[in-house]
Image (cartoon, rainbow over all chains, first blue to last red):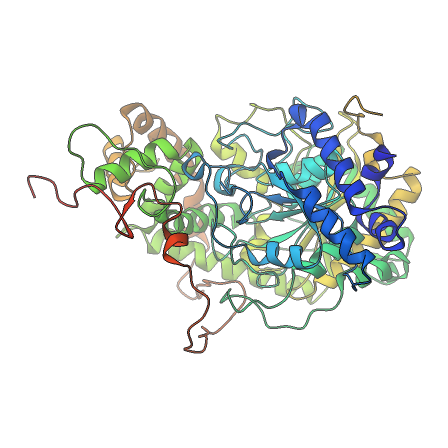
Length: 505
Length: 99
């Protein structure tokens, strides 16, 4: 019974909760049991809630009392540790915030609670969301459920691994340069980065404020839409929050699953991202997914995005510059770690010692890089130039979307690499983000859904779709349409082919 | 090659308030050299006629109504402080002896 519960999609579980066939306590207990069973191997969670069952029982009581609850009330939720929570520690994967208890909830967390979602715990991540593998977490890496020796992606590897390992049906992630989409790619799951400003950043511990965006991490496109409907929309506490009225993304996914949206859909493929830039099995999976769409009437159009090749370079100037400013608040005064050197140290000595002890290597690397890029004499050449590249990439998107409805790329260059393989080569690690970064620089939405397994290693591959800003619903329609065709062709979800973890039947 | 030197990295550490060890300075110098060489290519296309973009979606700054809203209590503001006394954050001396 509990094994069946954990494998349900959030949509199916919500239907059973609404009909009374299953209680939220049963569903929550099943997921807590699953976490107890497998998380010693996966390490998706940094903290597991000690009162999830109470929250679930309250939902069950309210439902029994006839209260009108939202469509996902009672469904368990995993929360990336970058999002602050009043009832669980929030560390952003950093030693400097060990044990930090926020006096307020992030808006997305508050909205999740109001919708009746049941927080299970906080998920592991690269420290302050800097990385593509979770190996930069101060609390040890997360392991990919498909192969425990491999990375689950990053920075949101914990959230992706949690849904891939059936420890949670839904998770929240954040995506600054691909931290939702690349983990989805390597774990055979679904992740969507909304249009910049579509989801509140209030209470998301800031990495790079002009790039960060919170979004859903799930096993199906419909589940992502259901969660996006809960967390999205204007928030007066985030000055970059868009005031748009958004359509229901769950409805968009349901509409897409009927399949006719592919007829006449113009799908752009970027000529500057040739197959030779990808692992053979990744590009093969990508091409076969395109063929499936073409067979349903989609038109594949080659487009040019000549400035995408400068995206990684611009990103690794803009992100460190913004991060070095955002992380200045970790000063040992108001919250977080304090390390006091011997003697009679000044407050500056204490800050410098604290930040050396509390930040990991990657965080220091990016703060130093950002400080360099912003320093007098270099600002125009580096940060100023990077901002111009941002304009050029936006123009590439504008001209592309004048020709096509969506752009498709493989979600990342390779399948999951081995833990430790790239940890000593930061530049190689940065190049993992080549396909995902342009969306953050331009603010457009992107989704990654499973396209299959790579022939050479049997590991999951994702296909990414990008749409114009504010057209998130288009990604749900197109993603759900392709997902329905592929799952049908596979005879079941891709995750059915992942190794079965855990000892409990 | 870029101009990243150990002295520059040490100076950046001072600016960023990170007390880097000699070993860290040495490692960062090599790594940043490679990274800066790679990212400097932005200047190839960032010509004077291209305007800079700071935010992906053009927005105007917004102000909330000037009304008292929900704020943290003193206890909430201090709950995570490494050290506090008399309702304030407590730190070591601001100025050193030689200052």
